[in-house]
Length: 119
Length: 119
Length: 119
Length: 119
Image (cartoon, rainbow over all chains, first blue to last red; front, side, top):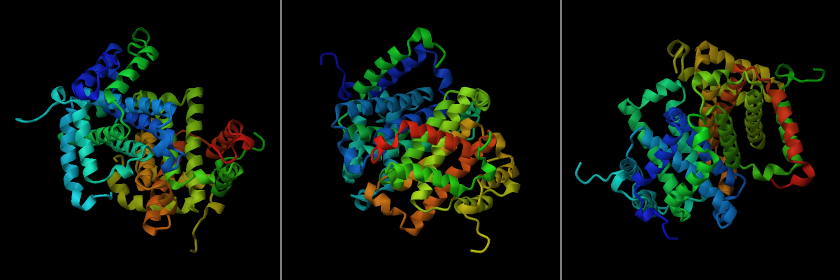
């Protein structure tokens, strides 16, 4: 689609700004204490879980082939990203840095040789 | 720091790839059904909440001024991003598209004039 | 109210049976794997949180003075109890035993003298 | 075991009192706003989920046959009950009443004839 921006050519800062502009336009920063945003994140994650709650593991793998389910999933995942980005904005957290720092820790905690194919 | 990459010059695809490489190197895709990943997201969000659980709203605002708390918060927020990115990778979801699509819906649901300063 | 049963004269087994009869009448045991029920519990807890999400600590203390909020809270708390009781039924867990066992552990972990007034 | 009390001969009020005594002995009522307790419930539910997170539905059904897993599950379920009972205590909620009231609503929402064997 003409004009569509994709993950390959969108910086993290760009979506941070999209979220920040939306929130500032509504003066909602006052509600976004880290405590409240952590609750909002858990609530959105619960809404995503709710889609798969009674499904077997096998059925859950296939669930996203249904267009309606896929739309619901994308909406809930978007909500999770929006609150996570709002959290990062509010507290000046550089997302790419904290992710790479965490992946390094995880790499030491779960060495490839030992954890290949098992959690 | 020389060589540090920040949100301003990191594309979403770049951090998607960082997460995907880590998971594929361990053959963990098999565990990442949407059901399981939605649980993992809710669990990480709960770990973030746990930091603020018994704090008053006021104390929670200040909590990130403490270096140790800030480190814990960054680690938990990173975990949330990692699982959300893994979810998007697994199901070929373009994050920038679904966020912008959701922000448009939210813009209609919460018009600026009516929701300025109130949820 | 005539015929009302209260917590003082209702055994835990009685409410376990109430929940079990409801579930068996609908053949729902098949959906109640421990994995699924743990998700259901987290989802209901998130619905309870959602009531207080944007409130300050102070406002949350007063929220239950409102009849509508109190009704919503009671409904969500009931849902949490129902799934927790269903979990105990499914896996033959004696609730009074596990609670008292856990309180003993907590008593050792949080001795009164040291934790008076602080978590 | 001599002296053990079981669900058949323990009233709900008895376990409410057990929990209340523990909390009052530590002056912890001050931390138990409905907002904070709802977070505590979600966090304990997440810890229960964490046990089953990467298991298939089938494996999760069998997980409680392992003594160590069963002990962990009982501890987490006890925590959920403790916070739910603390919530009811703090706000003078009669648990047997709200459960039976909710089951009546659920009975109308999910009539047996229509929901037999399906959610």
